[in-house]
Length: 255
Image 1 (tube, rainbow, N blue to C red):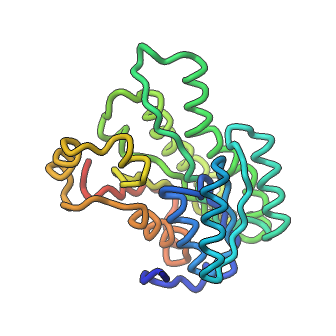
Image 2 (cartoon, rainbow, N blue to C red; image 1 turned 180 degrees about the vertical axis):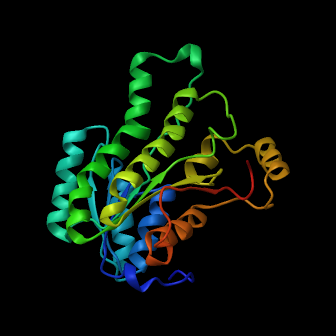
């Protein structure tokens, strides 16, 4: 089914890269950009659902490019982005969406778990941006959207390394926005609230947790991946041409 949301004409034919674009919020982003007529590529480590997404969009007449990639392998990441740029042209919109919210109490955190969490939630955002910046500069500008989280703003416990990474996304965003604004490159961060992906429903959403969320959230409905995708489309478009170095919370009024 086609999206009923707004159409941003400037997104048509624009090369877009979404990390973690095969499922959850990433899938909604991939679908949404494809329906804008953008030239979309996405990276994901999960091959089967990603290929299923490519096939599903093909039935709509939408062609997207999938590159299997472990984002924690920086050399593989750089090579994948280079292949995408060679096919689609210089990336003009990057959505650093991929992440992993595996939870572990502080006493149980090992150095390997710490490093792996940073690699899965922060490090690749920097190196993805690094890999596309020269192309954006040469093309006259671009937009980078880094995915954060409200978890650190809410003081959520039981996942200190994850929340540390997500708070660091804001510093990364503001610094890159300052450095690359003179080249017409906008860099913003989006902090989703509790978004009901399949993973969240399967692992964390209990009746008790849902009742508590509805007590705390201003909007009395569960948020879904399309809620984030709609806002990211706006940030990526020329309609948000004056927006950079900002941190936008999309959480239904939770924190």
